[in-house]
Length: 196
Image (tube, rainbow, N blue to C red; front, side):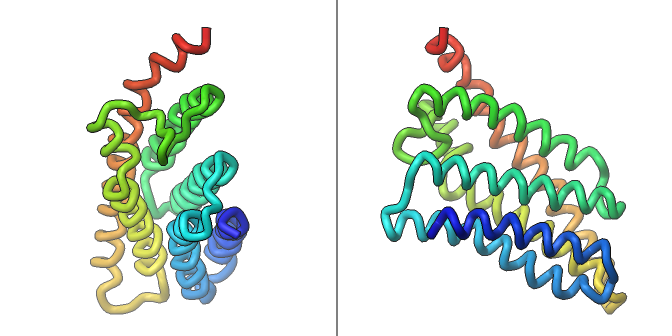
């Protein structure tokens, strides 16, 4: 069930973002779907834990789903001229680097999060894998996605403030993304040594 939710959110993201290229009248529906996409991000993990469905496949699908959804939103927002190209460039680059390292770690029996987390240092574990860090990043991203769409709805009172807050959340999300990637890179040396 958790894996179905993870995959469903990818398809919902495509639909939500496709609406942004069609007509401005569809932005409201896109906003509602985006809220569901963000909610499903936490729901899949909750379902996996509640029904004891946690697995390596689930962990990989979760990260894959996160990357696809995150990159799609940033790229579409950039294509629409809503954000600077540096945000998707930074997020995509960080994702490629950390996911390559996580793939190597997975081949050696480690996961990105959970009991077999690849992060050994307690500070690195907190920055990368703690519920606080993961939740904070997810909320910052979700706020950016929702506010950027909401700020571009049919003109209304306060739209500029909503857009500015959305832009700040987008920048904060990119910074958060990089900060959470640094410990993955710093602790990766042992995976290359173990893999000789």
